[in-house]
Image (cartoon, rainbow, N blue to C red):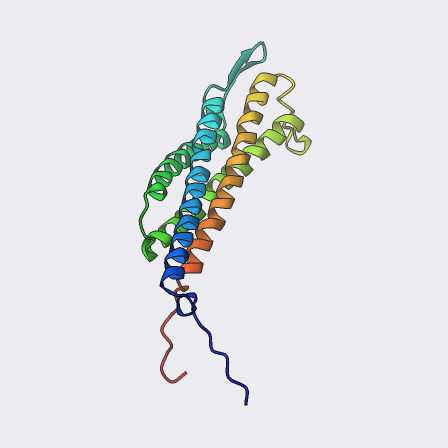
Amino acid sequence: MLAEKRATSPMEVMGPRDEKEYEEEEGSVSSTMRTAETLLRLVPVGLCVAALVVMLKNSQTNDFGSISYSDLGAFRYLVHANGICAGYSLLSAIIVAMPRPSTKSSAWTFFFLDQVLTYAILAAEAVSLELLFLAYKGDAAVTWSAACGSFGGFCRKATASVVITFVVVACYAVLSLISSYKLFSKFDAPCGQPRQGH
């Protein structure tokens, strides 16, 4: 008769010496992951501040008039979103850098906030990109002429800020994947209580 195979954990097949080596290896992987996540959370701080400063200093005056980022709601939203993301990135990097065991509530908090800020910065990027497209190309249907021919310096700075923000969006997308993985690989998804009689 064939013996049934039963699932065993790594600890059941290891001796005491192997167990210690396994825990040390798992600890070093956890430390490496924490360092990588901390760095990935710090990168958007610099990028958000750079995009914010470029946009804050973005104004131009010439014979056609004057224009500033504050005249356009999409660019104001981009500035605010970059400021919020810079603050959150710095705070979350400090928290992640501290060696401590992950709890279910902290994993859910990081997952939720990473998702919210990813979508907030993505929305800011999208509306700013649309505004830039209209500034470069215009829209004859609504008689909006291309403004970048007259305000080239303004458009170049706005483009730089939007490109930097695109890199921030990419960083936040990766952070969202990491926080999702950390949450759902360690903890079960919440589920409702089964109803009786069903």
